[in-house]
Length: 126
Image 1: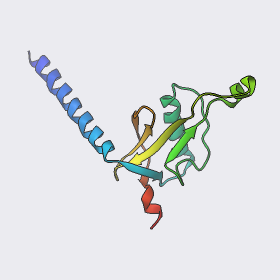
Image 2 (image 1 turned 180 degrees about the vertical axis):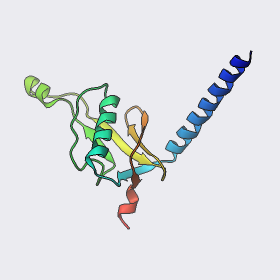
Image 3 (image 1 turned 120 degrees about the horizontal axis):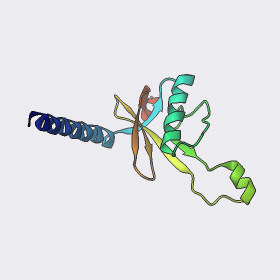
Image 4 (image 1 turned 90 degrees about the horizontal axis):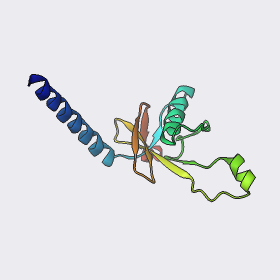
């Protein structure tokens, strides 16, 4: 009986953490990276690849430095074979609540926490 109660409390705690995380991301705003190291780009590339079902992708060195949006196009080799690409590009946005950063797939609203340092995109104006 004690184990069942403990499992119940653990589930409740996880649900509460999930709700808190979701509320933070709902108040998040567009962000830009603070660190441009190769390690940070590798983290972003791995997360974008995971979000796209594990396909191999290559990101440029300036990803999320000047814009909070990332647009990933379909395979160019496939486009050359068929002569035309009808697939829509996949768009991601870097967001922050001032403490944490998230990568959000705009078409589905799915978000993944990204362990990098970022700042509000509006901060670059000042």
